[in-house]
Length: 456
Ligand code: SAH
Image (cartoon, rainbow, N blue to C red; front, side, top):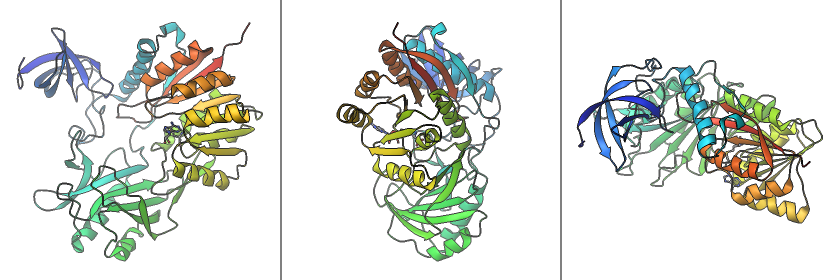
């Protein structure tokens, strides 16, 4: 096979990131935008020793799992990977992925994995409470906004992403018209010229409060008062600000925020817990599923009101505050100091006095507290980033011997590795359940309940 050569293949499997996989004479092809069961014509693009990447040219026989993507930009846009797959099939795919990783990487036998049905969404669209739209210019010199194409920073024009809220479109129209009228140029990455880089829009799903934060390549926003006048007329508009980012960087938000209108944050709640969210705060992007995910974590923690609980990798304390409603005491640990500031503020906001937060690495704070201060735990909850838990952290958990460990994971491969370690150290996997936080996308969260094996 040579570059640009076309071939016909049947898609048999799907990669971690949602690309279809087809095999030809033992050679593996990754083909984006295909679905398991499709027979396709594809064009060879890039080839390695044992695998290559090909471009979908034509679906010859569509898979029974295939559906027409709802979004016209589904293919070029880098946002969604699975839109061409029926939603039930997406869920089945994600559940299989979790199970396969536990077997392949964790070395668990199928009968050792107590899988509970994946938690999907009733309506898997418009679930995101946050969007960051880049601004740019098209060939005709018109201001455009939308999303980056996969792998590049070309802007795919799209003001109505179907994962985002309906209000985004009107807000973007206002910003674009404002820029045009006052001749404010969008930022150009190549020349590092122009002012408006991104618009961050957030909406509290329960509160209906809306926040807009413009990210600019400059220290001030000319005619900001006029933009405020127009945006504040949008129903629900609560906070308008801009963020200064003059760096040549892919990082979207700048560190400094200048407030133009409102209190500088919006308020929202998940279940009975209220949160204040400022432009730089981390906050889960799918609030409907977050409530279900953390509800499951809470259920698996099995709290009666007497327990001491540690929430490691606690972020802004979303899980900690959930747990604090049912526990005697909750300790949270998180590496980002601003997140802990948010966590402490949110605890106060909810009148919760039985939570305490530590800034630091879980793998340092936990052993330190255990060895120096003889703290202990009935339950430990972990929600680490994709790379999973540090071994030092797992070792300390094994030394502390809590009754239960609840593992919330955004990557089932590292989850599988860590579960094996905990199981070899004296724990038993009691429940495994997927929760789909990112419908149409490739990622999936998993919650696992582990119990300490009682010595006979
Ligand atoms: N449960 C949290 C989100 C967890 S995401 C919430 O709902 O807000 C994982 C978190 O782990 C991130 O906030 C990240 O900053 C933090 N983190 C990454 N490495 C860490 C480490 N070594 N120790 C403690 N926290 C860490």
